[in-house]
Image (cartoon, rainbow, N blue to C red):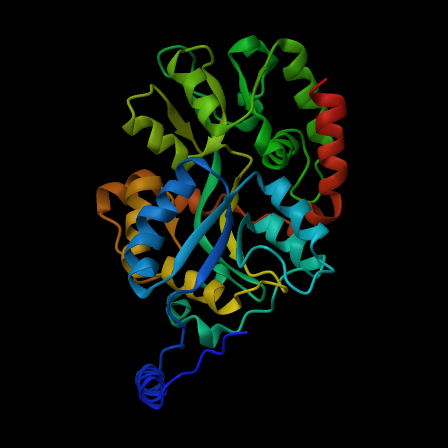
Length: 346
């Protein structure tokens, strides 16, 4: 076996570097670290690379590897790896509801916020004991103004009269069921009333799309003209010249938070903390608002007034914002998915 020895000069140089970082009050992250990020693919993965990884992590010597898969697949993988001393990811991108579920399962690290200096600027609602909110938007009713009348509610959006011009997104089953429930006397803590609404829409001919991107193509081709979506995505599609408008439904605006947590058995927790800190950089947050049209979660991010008017919410709309019951979602997610797959989709 070849023994690798560190010279006294190398040791002193390393010590000086660590001391310098400590003197600046910054966390010490070793260079040339490999950080594995579990995330969705598509636009989100691309913009993480563009706005977080390349400008803020790679220059510091981090090698970032994205493990791209659906949230469902990644959560199942975390569960399967739970008993291992070392998992295969250092940080995971999940919705706030999914992150809460992983927290309840005992799979996420309780965060040490002293290791995330940029978290000092986090909006309080985006600061969780087990993770951080990265970006946020809310669910709205959407429609093509050339083809259909303006809706006023989720109830209007799910109306069977739309026939096969109504589109529903498969991967958003949780929030689709929640919006349908709100449209029929349910709540964020009771999705049962929404099942009746969804089955009626399905009987009317509603189309099911596997992803957000596929749904957007349906809108662009005018195969569909109605549905529900995150307000941020609507602004993206408008920029891509798709004929679509959004409406704040009178039943309320359920929050969507894209969040990040660190697995308890992450091989490189320091790298996970470094990634969290990078995504909260002012410039990273501002660029995500420009590129992805979601709202920043840090108070020092500056969003241009015209963009804020597009992606933000008016004072009246803010009164309609609804926080999701994460405990309810976590407890009932398996049953919701089973109903979705075995009843609604068949």
